[in-house]
Image 1 (tube, rainbow, N blue to C red):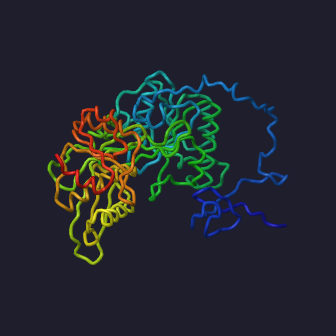
Image 2 (tube, rainbow, N blue to C red):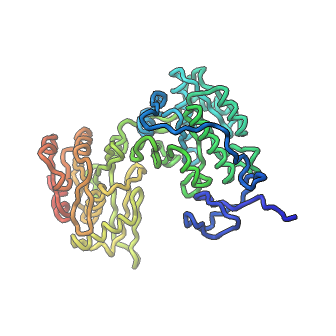
Image 3 (cartoon, helix red, strand yellow):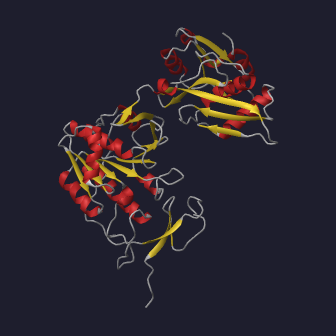
Length: 459
């Protein structure tokens, strides 16, 4: 009798299944991502177990008959989190929160549970990593909790599903999804099959019971959620908690959101009593900016609908080696090299024999092209030892021809700068309007890099 094979190979990136090991995944083209996992048992007919129709009478409905009354958002009690989620928590949504160990994922979600329970809603916090005593120690540091918050320490998926069906909370937290296991899957917790099974179960529970479920996910050394990439495809929202664990601030960023924008960020400060919101990140990022120093300029970047002012620092010096060194912290290094090539070709500044170090103060990372002009002016300021006025701000995209191109929402950027006391703004000339000039700031419109360099030191 032929021996049946009860295992298969799965791609850890996309979940592709294969009968044999392959070096490259044919679906996502990733290398060395296949691992062997047990497969689900087959039924007598050759199909998957339980593959017969359920016997339910299914009837499609028209779009106009879909009820929206039970899908209203409710606040998490944390404005920065509500901003990233798109306005609040939605019943029946599945949210994945990832981040480095010790970054504050469990602390943030415990604070969410505290706020939601204080509104009289039932909340269930399920931990597979900590005991009840450990959770209470962390909770005592945060503050007082309502009796509406229920705690459970369990890793068995079947038992957790029964508790969710019995209690029917309005919000639940699973900490973490990699610790959950199902006895129907013959593999260790955290494996591809177990993570996929757990996510699928919580997705069904969230949709059928109208529960907002938060899943805590561990990340790999590359900074992505551990487990198959299909995990991110199954959930409704993917949030990443970023920042240096030894620094005071944290940034919550959305990379996927079916119910809102993915451009919003939330800024938090880690304190001894938990995470505190930073309502004005611009003022926080500019704290400690040196006065009268060359190579320092303030630029404005948009994160969704929020303008954030950041200090861009540059240090340009003669290299002691044949090959100059270029380093960028908080900005894209390839973009910095491109802008330095534009300066050398279009502005006649010889940077081929200079080391260049670019840093965005505060540790925040910005990728918007609007900070191009700030990087250019910071490099020129350091190269020529010309300080830029402390009350000057700039933004604009720089093209390969040396032109300064338009950016979105210039009015919001100028208004944010005026609130923080800035008096002068260098921006693309195509963005200058009469309405902008009436904001009480000196508006300097430039059309090229040469013109921006000429106007950067003007009073």
